[in-house]
Length: 452
Image 1 (tube, rainbow, N blue to C red):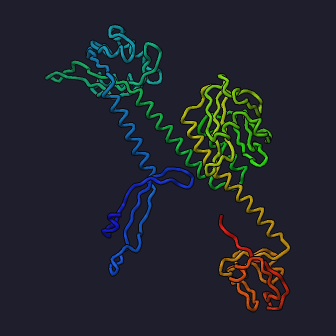
Image 2 (tube, rainbow, N blue to C red):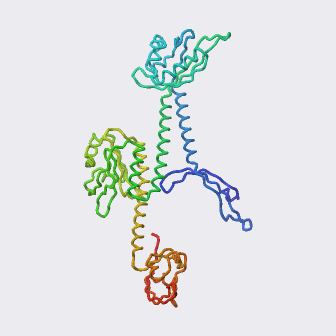
Image 3 (cartoon, rainbow, N blue to C red):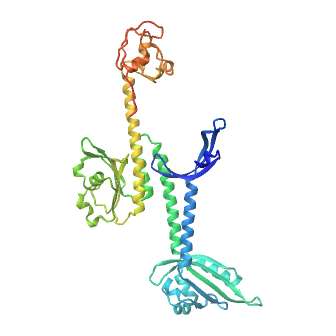
């Protein structure tokens, strides 16, 4: 506001919440329009740019950099010296080899090259050995990353950096190196890659489902979206019928196939009813602990017991209109990330279902209006025709194309459209509105359409 008052352009980066309840970053550019004569602000022109992707990349880079720096600065590293006279003959290795890998320095030194090779991951051996040979033979610095097996059988990622040292005469005398545990960094990279893939899937899902106008296609898109983001062996979507207090299973999938839809009283739905009543998601890591038994177990499809369960409410303006669930026959298949993604999908699915229902309702209304025997018109406040049904053409002779955008062609002495709107339901008589301006005896009732 300070810059606007000073008649200066501005730009800023802010977060916004979209209609679909997504948080996005935007850059706002603006320039004030100033009335110099009256010395006041009369308007602003500018542009808004979506910079969410850039912000996500910056955040991911900052996160990776933080993890790497913390790892290098806080964790001990293994330093070593290899004899130049024999490939892989270690003459010194620091005690940290015991901390990181579980082997004593003596085991490492006595085992020679074979000990190192035997404990490098089979998929990394050829590459890692080639790096060592190039340093030993040609003086090429080692800069490699590979996996090693610890004394307890775990896998640790190491970053191995080494150089060949030479004396004053240029003769190689030693290979000096350091191995750093980068397991956490590798896991972070894997997690970032996974999150990037998940975000891309969520974005594509939102694009697909927003464009879907058919309820069945919404359900199919929802199932595909969940399957792409998490393990799914059983899946259902249920919608609430508040008036009859039942849950309508509109999509049931179990072990590779669709099952017939079912309607069940809410009182018989156990854990699903619990989620509906509380409006809170449910996460069961392993149903062997009896969680579903406490609320009332539900079986569908093959009627076999699932072990891992996620259920999220479908909310529309804080009102629960249904539920969505993904399940698996193995325990501990879901994480808090999976639950968060399911809740994100549920919000989008609820909007898509509401949209598809509205479209379906409008289509049915349009069919009913088109089939009506009486002429029906919709006009704006000035009497300009916006829509007409086929019966209007039959009565007046005007085609729908001729009527739309024209003033309401009624000529009733002493009566105006405004008066008619103010007196809803007032009948007209002897109106001249035929295409040939011939008198037609008709009655007309006017009703105001209001936004809720």
